[in-house]
Length: 152
Ligand code: FES
Image (cartoon, rainbow, N blue to C red; front, side, top):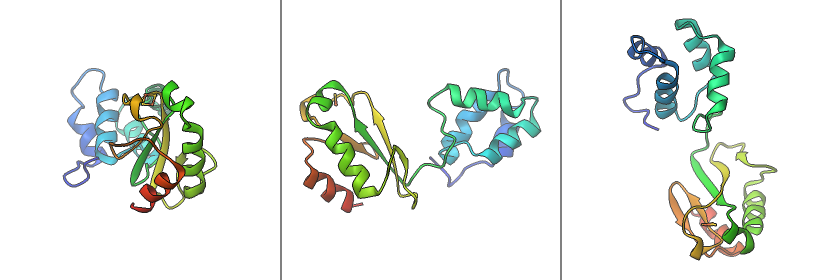
């Protein structure tokens, strides 16, 4: 997410206005600039292009790369792959949910963390594993998880 020099939603739409199949590039650039595609952004796209809001939602929900909710400041990915699963991924999830007062995957009320699950983070020998903001934390125990979360 790069909000420093970000173009507005209107400017992004304008920039892509002469391209064919403009919707996906517009959605990609909005997502990259703002971290998600807001309801307001979808209304603006619909107003300034020929796409109906329902079509824009259809595309945005079809591709998992697009997020329709504002993400938390930090992103936590809990690995649920086979190696992590047999080594306690469920405990990792339970401890994280308990610490962050979440009842399901998603974003905490204070918008500090977004918690997701992934199939495999590619470092199975460290199972169970989670990733926070692109950094892998392995051989997790409940105590280790609590310490890591407190450091944020
Ligand atoms: S299964 Fe978790 S890192 Fe591969």
